[in-house]
Image (cartoon, rainbow, N blue to C red; front, side, top):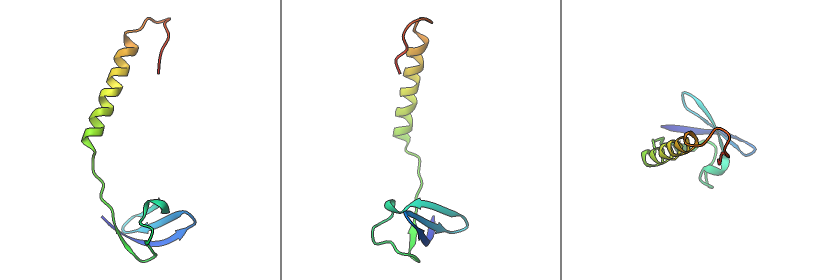
Length: 74
């Protein structure tokens, strides 16, 4: 998806297309200027998603296995 850098408001970059995005200026290339076209790609990180799901499942199993009055470690 492509956006045009409309302007900078302090540390925020205002990017426009059919929608407007307000992003931290620090994530843009240092040389980015008003009027530049920025290409943004959004994708699912399946590996990280699966890792986090497993981590949550393991925590839930651990919590379910404890006695009601026992300590809970988070």
